[in-house]
Length: 323
Image (tube, rainbow, N blue to C red; front, side, top):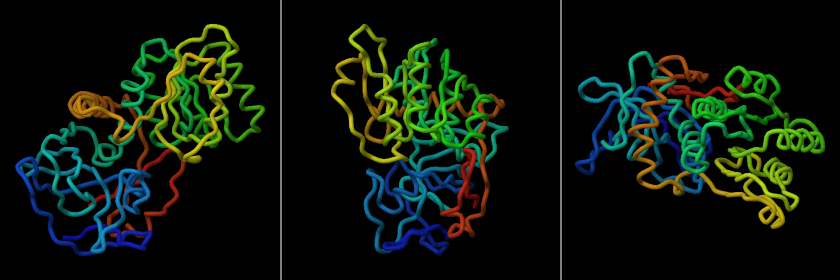
């Protein structure tokens, strides 16, 4: 079968022939793959740079961890692969399958789940979002950030503040449910002044952070208390696009009623993952099928995997590889 394979000491996957995968246990089935989204997560795992990944295997590793596929009976599903997914055939686990509703394209069904993982899990389980909460999404102009804005609004956020560097994308977020935009492209002083004023007017309850690094330091400094009573703030780290380390003053932690946590592989319970696959993701699929949750995708054929691997996608779009 044809597949997109990453080899050691190579930063770009190759379109090559690979043996068809085989089922290893009773919980696995063989499926025909239709579409796989290419995420930062996939790139990190393919090169061994993500914390959950090992180094590429000498005989190559099929990239991609999830996607849309067809069962033997023709039913269209989203599935998590037991191994690599970006190939004509893949082995998936029976308990990690979600039916794709009619009216939802392969591309959107392939692209949406990872964003739901990175948004809904943080909002629902780590931040414990409640109707009326004020939510700040740091780095909201990316694909997952755009989904997070819409899910936060769906979960009842009273106000959503978004940050990012792309001004046109920030303004688009106002159409998706954001209430206030604060540009990260301005000087630090202007950014912190704007955020402090916003926080004073409507105290932030939740921070969903996709950037970490310097912007997270600035946000935490803006939230710092002065000894008076503060509201309960839940700061959730989901990504580190701006750097993996920050400097954090203990005075910030001591001056606030704040909870710092992370949301990602290893941070969720088995029960939460089960709810994700049986309740949350089917619900989000239906919202997307009904046009109540929108995303932007760029479809490309697997033959062009080498060119598209480093393709620059702007304005919160996601590349989806079709097979």
